[in-house]
Image (tube, rainbow, N blue to C red; front, side, top):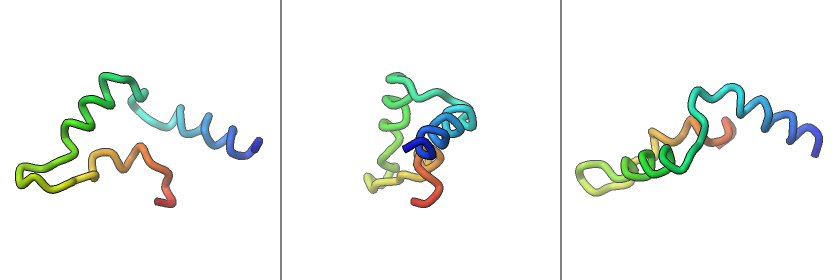
Length: 51
């Protein structure tokens, strides 16, 4: 558990943007490309590196 907590602290400081409600709305609005197909590439930086 301690290791996970350390990782979360590192995660918070490494990211340029803090995840806010406004940012989530903005990112979610970009989830589907112009063809109507899911495109998650813009949110991958917010996921764990092992995904």
